[in-house]
Image (tube, rainbow, N blue to C red; front, side):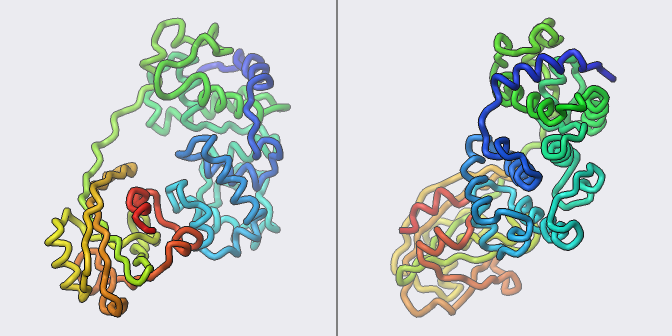
Length: 361
């Protein structure tokens, strides 16, 4: 259902002028900076992103540098942000920009949508913030704020609801300050009209316009259909140490954490005896096997329940076998034996393994 959001404009812009957080990509909103920051901000808090952004920009200051960087170095810069395909799509897009656009992001909404990893929200953010073009940028924060303002019980997980809101906002976006308006709504959603817990309605510049506040339905809006229950997978993680080096290997190119480095692992929950027998079958001789405890990591649709072991191996067996994921010869991956310093500085390990990284000493 259409809704007229034009009464919110002046209140939002005035509030934003007084309350906008100082952020590195806002201080210099060049297209490249807006693009990188918006991709980083997907699924990650603003305060956490600031340090990542500044480190990334220092090493990769433009599209050419991003297009040419080795993937391992790129993933290391991205380590901890998760969803590593976002980083790979950044590099794909950078290559296209260098080849077809003179290394610069196009200031056209439709052209941006053609680029890998750029959807309607990111395209709207880049065009409005960096190029001052009146395009909406509708993310979770914007959906939450505007659904509460309009008092809508529409399901925000439905694409038609997002599309309708984009149309409604496109009709009222201030031509002279579209980027400020989009950022004002995002900022309000992140700091006042918050996603978890009771919204801070008494601090909201839209309180007098908000239908959810008027009807006391702010805790029932926005409406989301329930997510499917996550699939639980048990895994055994093996921290293999030999001569001061630790084994890591690359995951398959498809599926969860595709192409990322990991500690060797095997599906299922192995007891210490089972783990020792498993390693013997691979040709590894264990001098000592130490239980490291259990850990859990939650992905969007999968939940890993992990059991870990630190295994000190006899020297001289580095090439005896590979890293088996399923026990199949065809699924064997080559091991890389790396020093702790190399794991810290060169190789990127997903945050799923953070609990076990501390045993690499």
